[in-house]
Image (cartoon, rainbow over all chains, first blue to last red; front, side, top):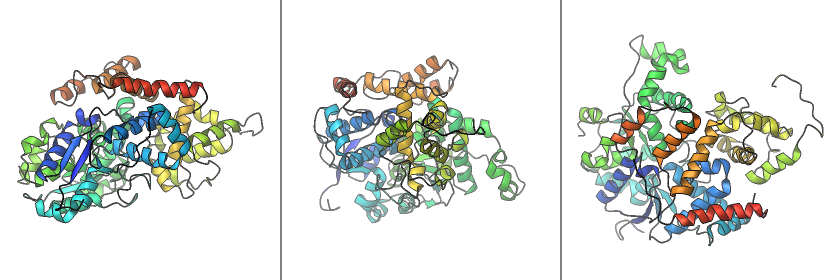
Length: 317
Length: 194
């Protein structure tokens, strides 16, 4: 698949969130791929990957659900493009485990009543943009550079961890998001929390956990001077965007955090605490925006922390 | 419990349990030399009575029941930081999965019921619909946990933003999912799978 010679084309596993709470990730992924002239065909009748709850209590079920999805994906041509970091992680983990462990593979094959198809490359959207489409070509395709937009690239947990499984980037010091942002003309900021957990699926069972962990992430982004955060996972997006107002209510001034206690007065120079709204973008929204896709077709109406004032301010709308 | 002397003997150590954990997780617990990197990087350790390195230490000492009695395993976010940073290749995230499964199979003697409830409803959703039906997941969680007002204002907002669908149709190949659940149950009944 040499770019330029043959049109890039992928099969696509959106996952449950992208059909519901993360709908703007799906909308913007499709819009971006169309703008880049890259094919994207959804796997028919895919199932939930089981996400964290399945592997939490039943690894065999988790592996079987993913193996079933991988065999459904065989019906569509092209490597499997995945946008959700959790689905991506589960599908890659399944391939990794079942290739290494014959006993598990045999059990899974009994469960799905067929052979486990493990050879279709599973690729995250970031990987497709940076490596397969290519950073140089991405930069060339930019119609509206994201000039002056300071973005905190947020990797979260599952894009890079555990080592050896996602094969996306370094598990402690990745750069793929920063590379993509630079290609789009944006300015990635250096910050402390780009690989910390947001609280993930505790949003249902123990939202207090999410408020605490996501508050630290938002705080860190503000301290680094970011205008916004870029994510590649619908769960991270949900926690940072949907719960942002609640986080502010719960934690108020940043001085109530450990960070604030230690550095607060120096950093803020005694002025009013930084309470800026931090809009959360999916990587595909920012990329599509830079490709000149109309903002109306990027699902911004579904976002809770309104990104439009920031984009207008930066003359990107 | 923390400050009480721990008497180790054949009666107080359950080595069979540790072997089960090792078999399920595919990771040794004996390799751990207690450097504590896992707990240092753990975003959830402040919520746990036994931080990750102590969970492994308790396993080394055959004290699985102490772990299951607490809430630590249910407060693990599966962020994989521990597994990533372990200098001795102890796959702590997999050990946490194994411990949760053993607790789950024993019908959860743990104090932490909300996380278990959320997991159960999530898996039920897969079996019933094939994909997640988020509105049902949230509503069922509130009903069953008795927190009727939890995120009450959030629901209508998310519906108006198109983020929560009111209605959800089942996968048309849903019978295949039921088959997977059934065959796993059968394998376990026959002792062919853990």
